[in-house]
Amino acid sequence: MVFENLEVKHKKFGVGTVIAYNGKYMTVKFESAEKVFVYPDAFEKYLTLGDGTVSEEIAEDIKASNIAKQTIIDKKNAENIHSMLKGIVIPGKENTGHEGEEEEGKNSEQEELI
Image (cartoon, rainbow, N blue to C red; front, side, top):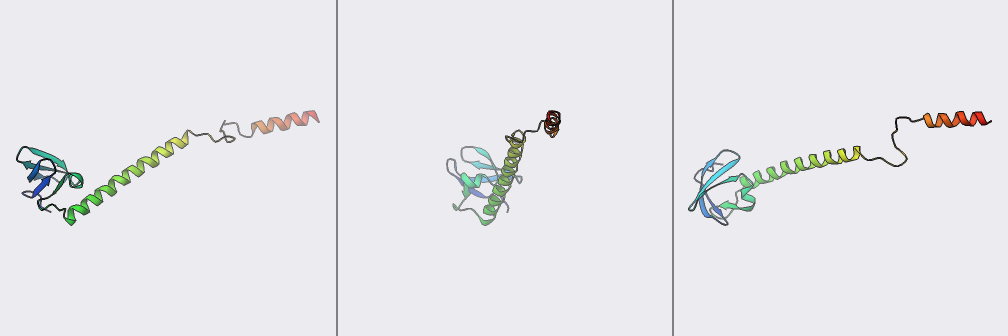
């Protein structure tokens, strides 16, 4: 989609024209000022096309962006859970590095008593 010279509406700044777009950011010239927006995030909350709609292409870009963000969040959550589990000790399953030695000592003591 070609964004340059596209008319958009903003809730606060009113009607503006896209004057630059680089694939991630779009600059919109409003009557009062020029503002830079992150694409496609701005169309979720702040911008609509001049006719008050959002095109299918923009809606698809928003959907893809949200999926990518959720993937990053899920990955970070999984890493956090993994990190937390490393530090958890399950009672009765403590890892002392001396597994089996305690049992061997008990057996030796019992043999001496017999």
